[in-house]
Structure formats: C-alpha cells, structure tokens
Picture 1 (cartoon, helix red, strand yellow):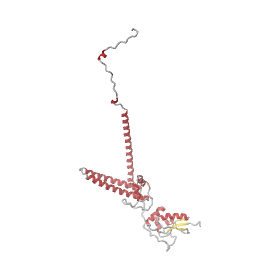
Picture 2: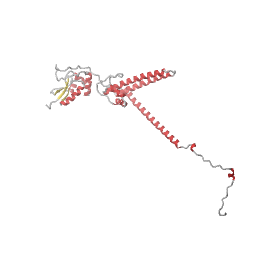
Picture 3: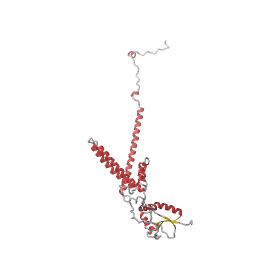
Picture 4: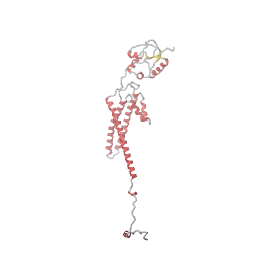
Length: 315
C-alpha cells in the first residue's frame, strides 16, 4: 500500500463561478507556459497534469491547481496515462474514453493573442516599466505647453486690470490638474497589473511615508513575463518608447547637476559671509582709538632757558 503512486488528472471541468479565460491564464502562469499550449488541455479529454506522486505530494499539487480555477482530481497510477508533455506533442492523445458519469466539460474558447492591445486611457491592460516611464514623459511634455498657454491667457486678461484672468486661470488650472492625475492613475494601474498586483494598490501613494517610495517600487519591480489574470503581456518596447524613457535619464541628470551647483553656491556664499564677519570683528575702528594729546606749554616756559646742573662738590 505504501508503494502506491498517484497522479493528478484534468478533463476540462472548472470550479463554479470561474471564467474560462481566467483559468487558462492562471494555468499558463503556474506552468510557466504559453497560452497556446494550455489551450490543448481543454480539448475535452482527460489528461494527467502530474504523475508518480506520493499521496501528500499529490494533495499539495492539487491545492495549487485548484487555486487556478480548474477542477482537477487525484487518481491512482495506471499503466497507461497521458502527461502534459504528451499533450504538447500530440493534442489528440486519449487516455480514458468519454464517460456518461464524467462532470461537465468546458468548451474550448478562442486562442488568446500573444500580446495585449495597448489601451492608454483604460484601467484594463498591462504596460511594462519602460513604457510606463515613456507614457509619463509624454504626459509631462503635453502638460507643460498647456500650462504655458493657460498662463498667457491669464496674464493677458490680468493686464487689463481685471480679476477675470485670475479666476479663469484658477479654473483651468484645476481642470488641468484633475486631467493629469486621472491619466497618471490609469498608467499606474496598468503598471501594477503588469506586476500581477491589484490596481487598488495605487492608493498606497496617499499613505504617509509609504507614498514617498511606492512610485519607485512600481518603476523597479519587473512585470510577469507571461500572461497573468489581467491579460497577456504587453507588446515589446518600440524605439520611440526607449527614446522617451531615456529622456528621464537626461531629466534626472539635469536635476542632479542643478542640485550640485546650488549646493556649491550656498557653501561659497556661506564661506564668504563667515570670512567677512570674522574680518569685521578683528578690525579696529576710529571710534575705539584713544588719542593722547601732549600737555600744553606756555610761552614763558618755552622761552626760559634750561638751568645748568649744580655740582654738589663745588657747593
């Protein structure tokens, strides 16, 4: 009895409430395979997903498979069986005949495309790290000229000594900020989908301290190479995406250089200020100098000749 080996079989059945496309994508992610190969598992035939397992190992694999949404089961090993590799090579392979007592089988859906369609203004879809940076750069480059136009409109109306320009400029600035934030959130949600995370995690940007480094996490963490529950992977990066992404390097380099120049200027001004203050504290002003005048001499004293010294021996 201890030598009995088990296998995990699957005949296309799904768990209640699970979508067929979702189950296929989850299986592709679990087996690290493409969706086209997973499509062959849903041909209405019973196949062995894993074989030659102990009962405990079979239970572990079954739990992982059930999380994908399929309805797999454990059976004892038999002499004739079909594994997943055989399905890749021979889609028409059959292990067990159709049984009237078998559970309902799902119909084979349409094959998923190898890459997802890009939808910049949608909460659905996925984008990679470079495309996320490139789209954000485009959003910034489009927003800056609009801000300049709004500023010119406001200044032109203000020059006529009217508050209408200020009011109109404020309203346009609010709408521009809302539009910028909405589009930026859409880009962030698709970036989170590419990692395999829920788009609601964008709210972490609003959390103190966490929001200061979470955008960096979205730019650094790589996305899933295959399909996940949010769809197929995004298409490869184009040359335009790479060029726009490289502009961020130039942008950060300019900021870094500006910060260094500002720091050096501040240090130099502080040094000159300290040097000047130390020089002022060590100098002597004219008010602090005490002028000593010689004693006054009268005219008679000046005309009187000096007396000869008296010799004490002559006296």
